[in-house]
Length: 356
Image (cartoon, rainbow, N blue to C red; front, side, top):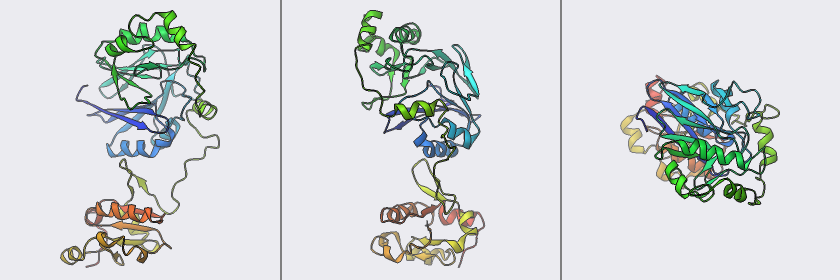
């Protein structure tokens, strides 16, 4: 993998779905492959923390086991939604065909048409042919099912044998799913060891296997397919519910944070909890006017001293221990709580008022 490429493999536990964020190091332009609706906060935080410009959400196909996060990311980042011309997905910004390219910075993904799981399946291969994102077409020691959504075992056989297996043996396969904790494979491995299509398997072997699997339909089929035909756009255009007390942001690490500027301008509406030690506050001789001081090591024993009638924002010197304080409060039943991003150091750097 080239060093000029940022690459992140992300996982949704519920649907066992892998999403992939790829970005050009120099330009910061990025694309996101097969996002998941419920992971929007995580994905958006990662984009923002890495200071990326998301150009497009790419769909390998219309999924049946989870709802895509493409529409939400378009709403929040103004990116494009791109998929196969045969995917059936409405309101695509670009429709892709075999051989098309999706460019971001100095990189490009080439489209390989790989129908069979659905008739709109595509895979994306990097310009150096060292990475391929196969969606549900080719999995690690498996492949996508072919018994619904215009699936065809014969089509999938030729998509894999004639197109994916034509890639270099050392090309790394990144699928849309794995249910056993595996993260990647290689073309050469699957050509030899895939139990459905590897080794000496011919079309009759593969079709006979696929047509007799008798799998139950995905649990979310009736929800996921209609939603994904609209690129994940909610039927009522209702956005996921956000906290009603302030513009909190959930970081990629899962920390609920709020900006010092907003806290300063809404100070009278909030309760500020300073979790530095008494020695620190004495030595540094600065604090936010009216902040309650409970050192982090005493918080669990003194937690009932923290009021519940107002949102609580936590702070310390650098905004690290106060993350733990916010978690302690949340676990104990405080619902309106957030960490002040960057702590007192950022607060002072931004020229906000302190009490000495």
